[in-house]
Length: 314
Image (cartoon, rainbow, N blue to C red; front, side, top):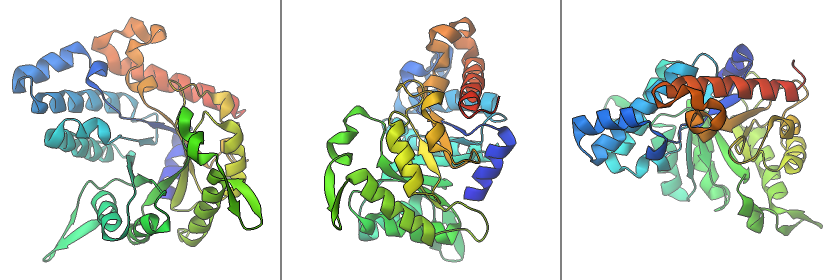
């Protein structure tokens, strides 16, 4: 799956992943009214509104980007109907030949971690039939329980030829409270994110596809920390980097150069509300709620141009 992601990045010339992180305040009024008219002001109605909203965005941008990243919490807040919308979104994106990164941030140990890995990336065997659960192509993984929480995902990735992105240096302001703390690594002290980056590099080396330069094992490194991105790019040469924090969190194209390799690959940049709620921003307000998906398309085109300029492709 990592090779499919790379091929689609090359085809679109857009190392961009659209974060499908819907909140009702982002969903235009006409979509909410239609959904609530059919299902009432219920969880089912909210989930239908989210699904229709996602569908419009996917239809508008699927020819421009290689991947999407639905954040499961935005769906879980609507209970079982929300999870059904999450699954419908995944399936629809796959119909559009998009790579799906499940932003689930799972992390546990033993059989629990194995069940998470199977549910999101793998399959269960029931009699003669094989069933896939959510069936994303990649999943984000929280490594802070140690390798016990990551290895079950690695096993499933090897079986299914899918991938993970391990949280290493996240984009949020308080990430340094833990991730920047100096810890002893052999005879030296290093920030925790560097130690974790070294672990990811080891896993990446072990889990390589039969062909290609990048591993099934990637890392999450926030756009808001460009210097750490430069360091981690050197530590993890075989890992693709998923870069959140662009746009609404303050990251911009100029911050991203060191996340990429010299060949212009090695990273994919996420924007969520900067794209899906673009119509609510001043520069795209002309589209209005009725044409929210057109605003999202315009935001993707602007982001692609910004990143290309930063990488010297223009």
